[in-house]
Image (tube, rainbow, N blue to C red):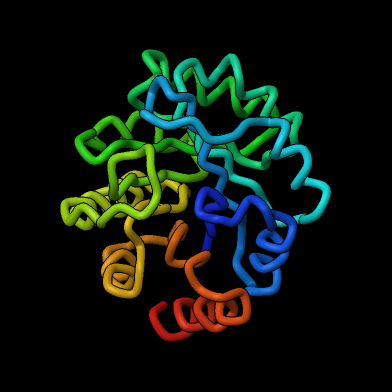
Amino acid sequence: MIKIAPSILSADFLKLEEEISSIETSSADMVHLDIMDGNFVPNITFGPMIIKQIRKITKLPFDAHLMIKNPVFFAPLFVEAGCDMITVHAETEIHLHRTLQFLKDLGVKTGISVNPHTSVDFLKYVGHMCDLFLIMSVNPGFGGQNYIKSATEKIKKVKEIREKYNFNYEISVDGGVNDKTVSEVIKAGGDIVVMGSYFFGKPPDERKELVSHIKNQLA
């Protein structure tokens, strides 16, 4: 079954409690948290303080997608705030194996993400250590971008590596997922689709139908 992970980067922060509630009532599976530092990516979003507050109003799993430099330094703060999974970018980590072990020792699930230009060949060496592999299908930093077509082949390759080496990670895809691209993502092997403007661009009373359509008709 396909999982849906709405990204609150596209939510209305003046109504954040209502937006989080709509994720629950839509039967989506988790909350995607886009954490940007203005250094690794050209944008700044939010940090542990906001996460700690929204943790109080939902029990849905939190995946903190750390688009930041030095994620090892900040990861404990996000775990303390209530995140269930920490996803780091391979591009930021010289010692990725060590970083994943550090996250495991914190007691959370581990994720790896790659930018559109990054090869996934390294995955065969660390795939056994991650619970999620996040493929960026846009250049990270801003919501509302168009899907980069080469991501489809990357999804297929990540799935092939999983099968070849008997890994257990889920494949997540983030960026430009909408009514024109979501079926392509799923057919290529995506297990989790991250949706920002595609989800929050719908009125709250239409989000449940959107999630149901993806899970039941496209899966």
